[in-house]
Length: 307
Image (cartoon, rainbow, N blue to C red; front, side, top):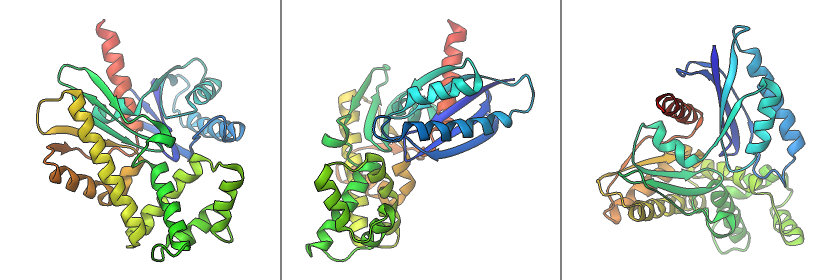
């Protein structure tokens, strides 16, 4: 049996799915993702991935089962993943995909906007003629609005404002200490002042704490999620315009781990659309991209078979 492997490393969790060509799932595994292969511990990450891949290999039912293709989507570490996959499964055709490829494919859409919000954020628009435009790929220093990194950073900044008395108290203070193993939140700000660097992956993981605090009706956390949703909506509107998509409403595929926040982010996004009289059909959010990876691999296989 020919099997395919789908890997989603776009969020704070790397997800892997082993399935046949029709999408019948043999196994799923997950672990912390690798945000930056030059700053995080690549060796330890590789060992974790190898262990999980061997577990997946053990789930293969027959001696003739063979992994022939792997699709990898993620902002960093794809080369590390590809090498590790081949170390475990032998010669596998590994394809690096873009998150922007996944959203529309997951809903079998030929045109529209994929709004990506994982560790990073950007949008990919495809018009009715198949022409593609990207917007917002400015990275953490100059962009990434509404991403996990942006939400985590904004949540940490909210703690700083509360400590200075510029805003009211927030649940995020206690959550920050627990997430970063601090005795006092000031320790994190002092660390950043000394060496100027807190790993993006650690900041991005704090986004989940911000979202949970917002669910507990914490006002500063809720404001962060609201701003994230509105910023992502603005990105989608601009992308649809510069892509030249004429048919309305414009199909929109929210893609990435941020959208697991559900109404906390999607609600403000839709309200921003209404305020700006922007007509979008918002499709269900794609949080786990592994099924979308399989969809792209199937499309690629069909295209190869007809050429």
